[in-house]
Length: 308
Ligand code: FAD
Ligand code: NAP
Image 1 (tube, protein in one colour):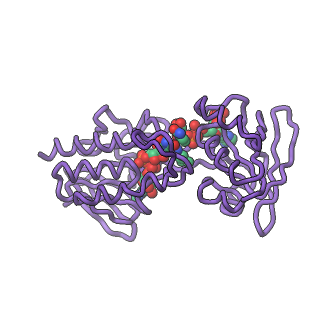
Image 2 (cartoon, protein in one colour):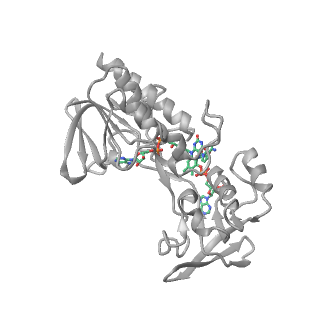
Image 3 (cartoon, helix red, strand yellow):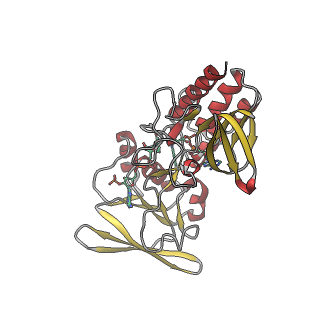
């Protein structure tokens, strides 16, 4: 029986593990299906993590976190959690491959993943010219022209990053006002090789067996424009990863809001005793590394208070 199962190993899960083990919980496992670090590992530049004054890539920022957490006894199992169920007073963790674990407490830290934009050709060319990760795929377009879709922080930051590698970036956005932070908008506008394609959406992405060869956009008046680019990066928001809460009868283990986010109080308690949420998965998450990390600490302290 685990004292605590942490589902997800991003900033929230890692910090929950650090606080739980350092606070005296003995049997704590963090189930993370990939490498620990979370979605920030895909970011090319992080400049707002307090105390870190250098601009780091997400990978650089997260590199020391697992070692620091494991030092106090946190165990990482690299496996996907399929479902968390209530089993009497405790929880049953159903793992990929049919394995199961029991836990007294669970903190859900499964975060979020990029949404698909929904244009023609997006699924067909995903991974062959359509990407959601500039750090991963930007270099393939060195000295070439690319398109970026979206008007939030991620789209603008990644457009700036790509403008340093690519000869030109077309930033396609469906409005003429941006959701991104004003300083990021200013930074983006100062880049001479970013061309704005505003009030426009992507009608389709087309190509051949080798991958994307062009992006067809359409503006609000119905005017089409063909961009002759071999790649498009889409940053149109995130969906929360709440699959592990879905029960066999179609209900959720705890109450969610209409966006599928876990409803918690200020101590990260859900409406199920012993079940907590932390990070991007919870309601009103600020969607920042420092906030996810803070949630993880708060949730772990609640578990410690419950067990001691
Ligand atoms: P995540 O980081 O999403 O981690 C969730 C983890 O859970 C993942 O590792 C995933 O593999 C794992 N997981 C999910 N489901 C399962 C399962 N069923 N079984 C096992 N494991 C599972 N924030 C900032 O503060 N500053 C920035 O500059 C910044 N830039 C960003 C740039 C980009 C491109 C993106 C995408 C995000 C950026 N953010 C930034 C936001 C920040 O990354 C998130 O707010 C933060 O990572 C959320 O942490 P989390 O631990 O809640 O979730
Ligand atoms: P976001 O803020 O939700 O922005 C998504 C963008 O995509 C919006 O501009 C939206 O347009 C557009 N969009 C949505 N669906 C679309 C579609 N189907 N077709 C075309 N465009 C579409 O998402 P995000 O940029 O990924 O950011 C997510 C969260 O992480 C935010 O809270 C953000 O602040 C945070 N974040 C922070 C940082 C940082 O602090 N430096 C960096 C990255 C992310 P509209 O504007 O018209 O809605």
